[in-house]
Image 1: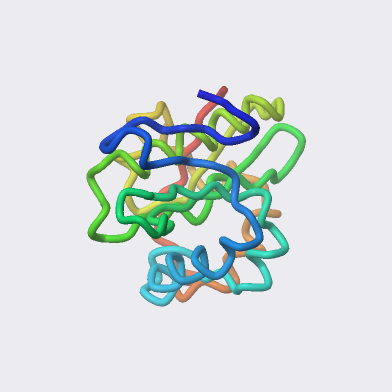
Image 2: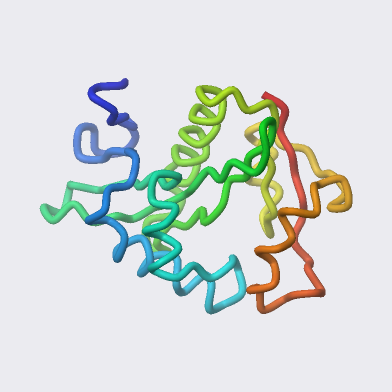
Amino acid sequence: MKESGKIDYLKGNMGNEMIRKAEVADAKEIRALIEPYGTAGDMLPVSLSEIYDKLRSFFVYRDKSDGNGRIVGVASLHVTWEDLAEIRSLAVFDGEKKRGIGSGLVEMCLEDAIDLGIERVFVLTYVPDFFEKFGFEIVDKSTLPHKIWTHCLKCVNFPDCDEVAMIKRL
């Protein structure tokens, strides 16, 4: 349900959880959520400066049920080209997994891509089974534009990338 730019995601405690576009005040919480995944090599590390720079590409899942409304999930949609975007930085706190938070974030990124007129969305992932639920299909990495690999230079696994490339046509 859209209301003034905010999208309610009704799963779990109705009315206490919301997916919305990130705001400036969210940047440090986003960084704290992503940092352990980047350190472990599960995703690219993202500096606080990069988060501020790309803030409007992020969606956050805020859980208000504990009173403080902390961010427990995050994802971003990065437009790569006129017809291509990437879902990046999908992260959910370990204790909050299996509640549909990641699924809600992916759905919001896909909806945003459709609103932007994007024809294809891709991911680089270690969990292809998760993305197959949304209609993503495995593709050879060489079919993706070379431009996307500039971000990979920051990865602890570069140049021996073992992520799976997947794409969904919208």
